[in-house]
Image 1 (tube, rainbow, N blue to C red):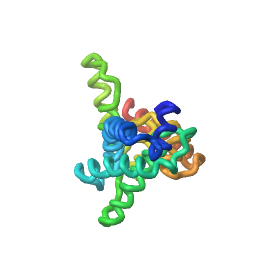
Image 2: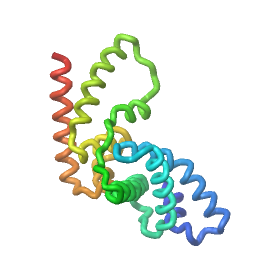
Image 3: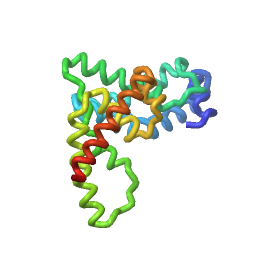
Image 4: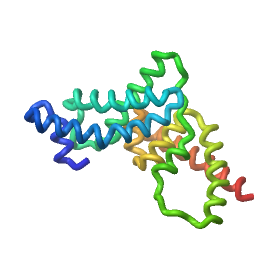
Amino acid sequence: MELERRRAFAENRILPADDRQRLFDSLWKEWRPRLEAYLRSFSGLSPEDREELAGDAVLRAFERADRYRPERPFEPWLVAVARRLALSRLRATSRRAETHSAPEDLRSIADERRPSPETECLRRGEQAAIAELVRSLPERERELAFLVYGRSMSLADAARATGAPLGTVKWRMHRLRERLRLATEVNDA
């Protein structure tokens, strides 16, 4: 989201009603599906929960836009709103929050060019190994994998979205990459 639009978002309460409605509608259309995809990383949420929470996150962000600083990236801030809502929902229903196996969502986000059948066969074997590895990761690392690899967030943005210190995020990503490297070496052998 460009700076001018972020500023309009942050100051949406002073916009004329029609402009405010157009801004909300555009945010809803652009960000609700993205947040719903992000919320798939919480396996304790039903599809209905994800849909509801994605909408709630857009609405809450819009209502509390005065708390957003337009000079900062928008996506990590909005993802953090959705994350807090999801964690609150999971706590309220006493379900354990586990993040999903990210590779399925990563495939839906990935480039749609079709590889050769041979490449596809090799990739499927690697994906199965990676999916198994991701399922075995601790919850925080699975969420981080989704944000960094699935949403292409920088480590700093992922740290802001999760509320974790940047150093912790870097360490978790280091461990995650090491596990991925070891898994692919075993798969290649």
